[in-house]
Image 1 (cartoon, helix red, strand yellow):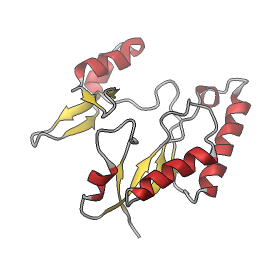
Image 2 (cartoon, one colour):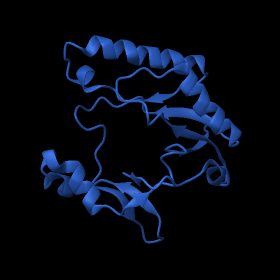
Image 3 (tube, rainbow, N blue to C red):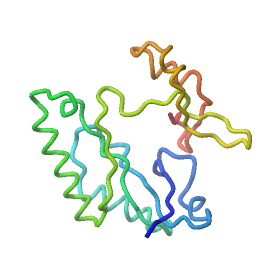
Length: 164
């Protein structure tokens, strides 16, 4: 059975609230993650349950996690990868204990994901992440994030920090 969900960046990182998401017809859950956990660290069961309780208090469920960020040591096979693999396994086990069973993952080295615009304005005024290979090809990889951020519509979270 398909479940309608919405990507939520968390109460400290998103300008959209759970209350607003709950008002979208048919949406019963969110896809989220623990943004404040450094890449490679194991997620504690306590932190996962705290996030789950917040979402459920908002009248929704966590339908999945996107993503448990994978440390570059794993992606490129560095010797210290074993420690990070153990942390990743611990995180997955803790998610299962919290009854969260869908995890998106990304094994791209260096960049977790790439977009040419982090908030491209659509004709109706909404914004979307977008990707244009021609624009990406013109960006120096060392300066990639700065260039993409500079050329994107600036979005600010409720806490005043830039999102992007």
